[in-house]
Length: 178
Image (cartoon, rainbow, N blue to C red; front, side):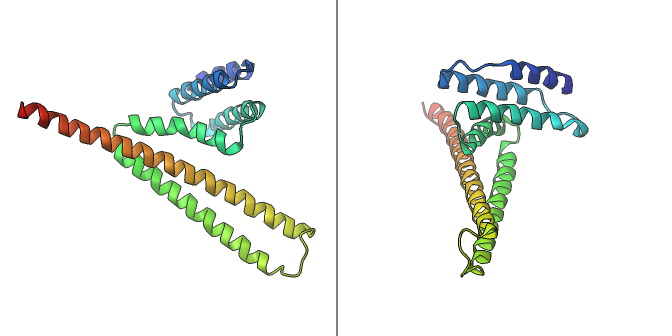
């Protein structure tokens, strides 16, 4: 898997954008899907995934796609994997638990940072420490928005799967009545 990913990474680095946003996004999505299809690499070679993400981030920057949008595009493939997995109920439950934990961590961190800001009641916003705290609050708010969007996508997936399951249950009953 590592050799496949390494070869594929070189192919991705050589990829040049066509200038057509939708065509380029489709190409990048196919790159992500192909990357995921190679499977996992040994733990001591995990750095290749970080290299892949850096190349993707560079491509997304060239397309003027925000960090949140790029995260959601990458997450779309994970959603597809969850939908296609054998034990998708448990996989979705585990993913939901993980996302909720991240959302709670982000909210707690924002609350803590905003509480800390209140101790600087008479400090101006030019103060470097205050600037740093405000920057951190914004970073956590962006992360919270991304996690919330991921949870929405996961809920949509689960609702769609539940509709499919109930449709499969209803169809045999309808044919038995005939």
